[in-house]
Image (cartoon, rainbow, N blue to C red; front, side):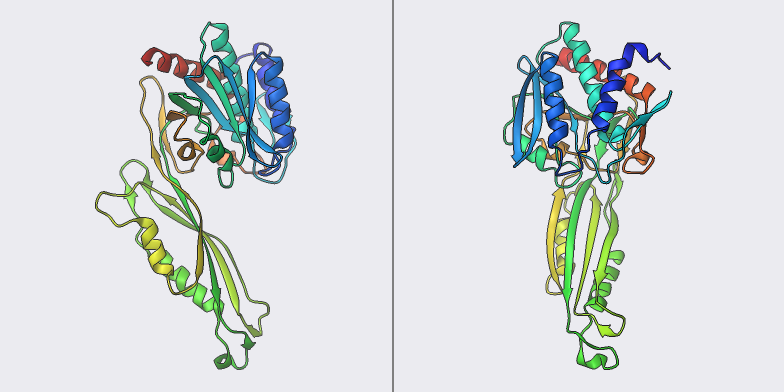
Amino acid sequence: MASAEPFGELFSLTRKLVSIPSVTGEEGACCEFLSEYLVKRGWKVEPLAVSPGRFDVFAACGDPEIMLSTHLDTVPPFVAAREDAEFIYGRGSCDAKGIAASEIAAAERLVEEGIRNIGLLFLVGEETLSDGARAANLVPRGSKYLINGEPTSNKLALGTKGILRVDIHTRGKTAHSAYPHLGESAVEKLLDLLADFRRLPLPVDSVLGACTLNIGVISGGSAANVIPGEAQAQLLFRTVPEQPGAASFTAQVEGLLKGRCEYEFVRETLPVRMEKLDGFETDVVAFSTDVPSLTRWGQPFLLGPGPIDVAHTDHERVRKADLVNAVDLYCRLVRMLKARN
């Protein structure tokens, strides 16, 4: 592993970012800190409004042709930063504040080499609805390539699955459980629906693999001796590209729901396939990213340090050597795209 001294600023910035709580919806302090940090280092910084008290951070050197981007929000709860000789720990260390620090270090190295027309884009809201990315997509800056950072173990992702989330609400009629014929169970209606979803054939893609279903939340009823009048569930599919000639998967889902419950499609993020480049290890990831919501920021690439299996956990961490390696990889990728352009 490289000694800490040449990369002290990289590790220090990662710790500082992790130390600022930025659970989705409460990213303001982190965005303010990073904006001030970049201004002091000579970047032209512009806030991109998202919602009251929330904004994305856009920074530029020249007129950016290539953007390095990731998100600053985290899942709850806040976990404070700490470190040892090998790792930096804490919420966001892997997903994705260490990535942000590596992208900044790479961008500054490239500027020192004389490379211009590159930019940085740090987003809010990725962990829920990608509202930061959707807001940024309304004000593109003319970039031709977008290098998005997520924990891919420093491998170039060939594709990411999409998301289809649907919330279901069934209604019945409450009654004393000793006289069930006087009521109508909303829970039983919900269970019948969920059973149908578990039997639903899920599409398979040759690159991204199989679509998957997670029944993430179930609730309903008020007491064991009361026929339940209401029940709810939240379902999330990790989707793959539609097959030619196949019926829309969203339409298939809606077909199971119509006339049987109240429902809302809360989020639909499309799956994405991306380009393979010589000299980069590759992988396919099952999680979704901001990339589908940044269609006007250029051709996407996805790469970042850290394994996804520690993200969102109470032992979230990133290896310092992986942060250093990511800086080299980001620089190599930008140089390759510059040469192509």
